[in-house]
Image 1 (cartoon, rainbow, N blue to C red):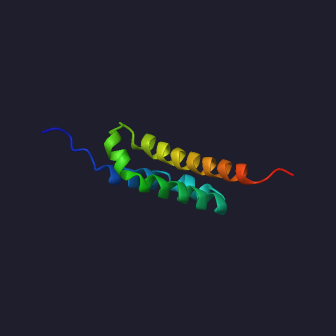
Image 2: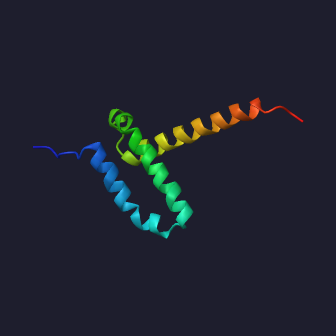
Image 3: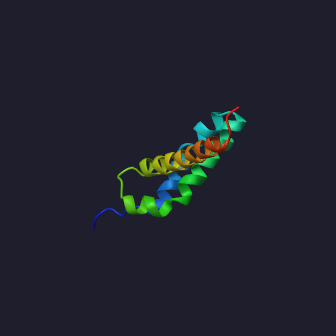
Length: 85
């Protein structure tokens, strides 16, 4: 029989565990941002499953970047609504 591949969600948890020392070494405010980014990637688990990338961290980072870009676009849109002085 061939190798069994762990479910994507389990692979995500493993990555999070592998980064626990990195997270712990961050400042408190950066730990909160790190946690937010991990949460963002977990919201896009279905997209990661469908991507079938060899390294789950790739789709996790992509989902984080997509969410950050969405926030940037929203901020730009709101800034355009502010009248010039």
